[in-house]
Length: 525
Image 1 (spheres, rainbow, N blue to C red):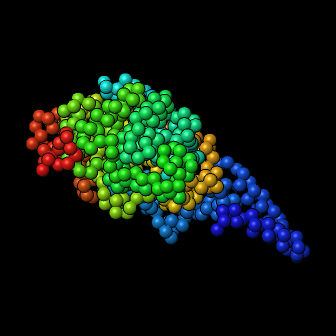
Image 2 (cartoon, one colour):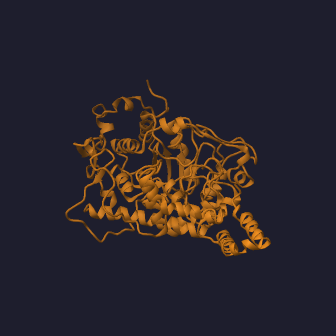
């Protein structure tokens, strides 16, 4: 169906009514509908109505009826994947600045394994300095950065449209948080509004590559020293398809995408599964140190979905052996992912965020590095409670991708990979993108982030803690079954400082520590 199909239908109906006198009374219906369709086409607040004049209003009708249809016919608010309706509703409400409270108590079954809770205090605290932020940057970093507690995770220009990238970056600018470029490069649309940028370097080195697809130091230096770039992130893997790589078909490689990525227009754009700039943990750290130097001393970190545990330990051993430090590590969970991925990878490859975050936290603490190196979490976080859980497990801050897509107006149509996104978020179609008005959606992005971070601070206040980083594993409780529950530190192992150096045989993952080598990502045996 053509997206403006309402206009020819209405014009035909009006012509028929004028030509056939008995039908002229229907003009009182058709003319107002034509005016409504025209208004929808020019208004700047609703993407679907702008892209599908009049027809999209059917969606608003069904949205109003949705709670009733779900209750009596389809499903409840806790159903629906990957994000349940209740999860999306809270994002929409906060993005719009609407009431986000919920009446009549929780809809969760508090005696099932879906329920977990934070321990509140009889003596809540007030008067927090809510401007506090973690400092990212070891002693080897001359330009440390203070990220917000919630930032925009990696989503590339090419996966998202130009208007979506602009709206996200303007929202980050307005809210004073950062916007990760994704591996698709630092595009003109990331630069338009000047919001803080974390430049992600994937295996394709887009925006800083030579003709053969290898890393180009000069091109990197030229962009990395710009004030807007706050940190550099080496992408080792992502939650949706760790270890897979990817291909952007040549048909989608427009002139703009080609210029941003530094690849030929109209040809397949390949992201290899592995990096060519390094082969071993030590080489990776040496390259990270060079990136830090070339960027003028900005923090450099890695992002990965945890796979084989000994590889994490190999990075720790390499840092201890060389003295070179990463400034931060972002752990992506296997439940994360905004773009398309093979179903087998989405469903069966990679460690979920909770286990991955705990493992990397333990590796850093066990090697005595957690005080220096900051830890971030990325993977389906969308609420203040989710941020609190990540803090309890060792994260200094969190990143979100799909939640920010919802704040832009995404309706989870699951058409991200088809270029047919109805809201203009995940498409390169100029017509569909025109429905997404940058200034309007940027404010939604800002509101969602601010309300979610505020909810995290509210939770820490209720727990009687001075700040979110004081949340510990023993504050988080989880059900084992309908009759038993326990705190997370009694369910998962949380290592003591230095245990991997002083007594590695005492830990459950001792075999992985023994397998790890600073000079190779391959197991020692």
